[in-house]
Every structure is written in C-alpha cells, then in structure tokens.
Image 1: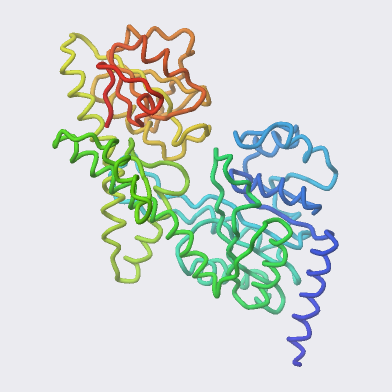
Image 2 (image 1 turned 30 degrees about the horizontal axis):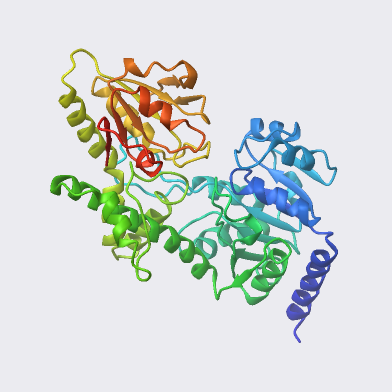
Length: 452
C-alpha cells in the first residue's frame, strides 16, 4: 500500500469513527429551505452543527429561536438554538472546525423582468460560497454540494477553486461529493429523512464517506458512479415535471378553442390504471426547482453544442401562461361590459399551495401585466403579508374578513391555499377565474365561475 493510500485510509477511518460516535462537526452553508431542515436533522442525529448564512437577519432570527420558513416551527428552531452544540454565523471562519461542510446556497437564473425571455444560470452565489470556504478548508474535511447545477459543476467548477486555494488534493487530503437536495416545501407526505439521498463522489472514497454520513440522517442512501450522474438526475426529475406541466398547459389552451373541458379530460384519462400520470394545468410554474433546474440542463446542452427542444418548448409554454391568462381575463371582463377602471383581486401569490414562498411565482408577472394594462390590482394571501414587485411597487395583502368582493370586477384564484374559505369567495364575488379548478374540486359550481 502506498503512503497516499495509507493516508486516505487513516483519514477515512477517523471520519468514520466520528460519524459512528456522533462526534463529527457538521457545517451547513446556506440556511434556506434546504439548509435549515438539514441543521435540524443533523442536530437530531446527535451532531455538533454550525450554520452559516450571509444574511444577518436570518442568523439573528435563528439565534432568537425564530423560524422564517413555513415548514419549520419556532419550537423546532428554539430547541436547536438553545442547545450549545449548535451555532449560527455570518462569517465562514468556523468552517475550519467542521468535519463535513455542506453547501446549500441558491443557484437561481439570471434575473429578468420578462417571464418569456431567454434565461441563463446564475452561478455567482455558489462560486462565492465555494471561494469563501476554500480559505478555511483543511486536511481531513469533507465538502458536499447540495445546490442544484448542471452536470460537471462539482468536478469542473467547485473542485478547482477548492484545490487551488487550499493546496490540498481531493481524494487524498480532503473529500468532495455531490448530493442533490430533494426537499418538497409544504408537503406533509414525506419527511426529509424518508426521501432517498443520491451521492456521487469525485473518488470512491469520497462516495463511501458521504454515504456513511448520510445514512445517519436518511433512511436510504443511493450511491451513483459520479457527481455528474447525481447532478443530472436532479435536473431530470424536475425536467420531467416541467415537460408534463407544459404539455397539459398547452392542452388547456387548445381545449378552450375546442370547447372541451380540460379538467374532465384529465380525470377521464386518469381512469386508465397504467401508462398515465396525472398533471394539472395552471398559471405557470414557480418555485426554486421546476422553472429553474431544467434550464440549467438546457443551457448546458447549448454550451456543448446540443439542443433540448422538448424542454425549451415546455419552458416557453409555461413562461407564456401569464400572457395567456391576461388574454382570458380581458375576454372575461369584456363580457361583463362594465365601465371604468377594472378592479381585480388575486387570491394567493405564492408559487404553490400552503407555502409562504414567492420565488419565481407567476402571480408577480400576472399582477405586473394587469397593472400596466390599466387594471387596479389587489391581493389576498394568508401566508404573505406584503410583496414588492420588480418595478418597486409595494402591495399589502387585504384582510380576508374585510374584503368587499362586490367592488371587484373579477376575483382570480392563483394559489390554492387549503386555509382559505372558498365558499365565502364563491358566494360573494361577482365573477371568478379559478386557475387551479379548486372550487369545482370542492363541489362549488356556479355560472359566474370560469376555469382554464
């Protein structure tokens, strides 16, 4: 056995011992929807945990035991924050004390005020985080990337920064792997630990160490042959959803012209016990995954001289839905034949039901398009007290009990939060455009209700 192999074996044994004895110190960089649940999971597993985030407001909130994420309660955060084995920091100096460093920072798209424009990955936050921790990386550490990105990111972007700045050799002095986050905000169906974890390391030893660590957090860990396989698997998962949602959104547009009820069509097709999975149309796609991840794949394909025509077309259809909704809204309001400025109330502005998350929400595009078209727009969302549009306009949510529905020409249901009293809305509104078909799914049918 060579001296390098002996060194790797010794470092591996030391880390495995720390995993088994729960004496490992885990650092989590990025305390958002992915990072904060990981903090709690690691603390629950018995590890010492340090959380890092550049936002001082988040860090101070956590130190006070207050949660800023709807899926995480104040009680959960308080339990963690009041334990001396957990600490929160804005600076990255304490990364040097960690055995495992997990990167959970956002990888968004480059900002654009036009939802139908061409979009590209924004890797600046990830690159900055890697550059920041590289100053403090030491021998014997494990770095895990959970931030979604294109195939090759870990090997071609992350690794060079780490090795150049630290003068360490991967697989010998320290270890690197990619393991995509698969969290589903707002869902009670799956606990974090029950969602299978994929792991692809730079070397076999990297994969083994990260697999061993994650097995103390997750019920099932699946090893893959490389970081590239794990990176692409995450993109495939969400591209599958993007394409199918784009398909039913295109069908919804066709069905309007054909005079066919798309919702009835979907339920009829779903009666087949095999070969079909149900997807629903809607106002578009939002959040941190579906509208973003597939475009990392599309961008990477173009960079390598290839194309992803199906993904590109699905993305185009979904990003065009707010414009389609505006056309349908104009048609509905023209039919009402009322004079003066049209008043519209948007119900729900988050990207999905029961989550206080407005990232990439099509409600913002819808509100801006309606406003620039001369509509007076208000909104109600029980989870979001105020929003700021790209043009700087600040809107405050109406109070449900004070809403006078008779003053609105149209009520638009954008997000189907389960806590909303839809019966009250249906009884008091002059006209309703239900983009989620939630009223009919609740048995509420009336002539003043329209759907996609």
